[in-house]
Length: 86
Image 1: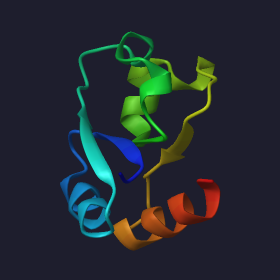
Image 2: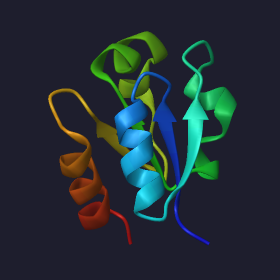
Image 3: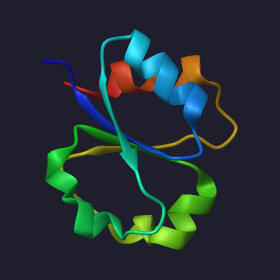
C-alpha cells in the first residue's frame, strides 16, 4: 500500500500527480482542524498557505511531513515528498 497523503481540497492538480505516482490521496477538508483529523493517520499533509493560517498548522507537530504548496507546481511537491518521506 502506498503512503497516505492528505491534500487540501483546493489542490486538485497535486492530488492527480500524487495519485499517478501511487500515493493514497485523502481530501483534507478546510473546515476541520487538523488535530481533529488525526495527524498520525497520514504520512504527509499538503496544504496551501491560506490553509496553514486558517487551520493553525504552525502549531502542529507529529510524524507526518508537512508540505506548503504555495508557489510550487505538482512535480515540485512530488519531488519534495519523495525526498522527505522514509
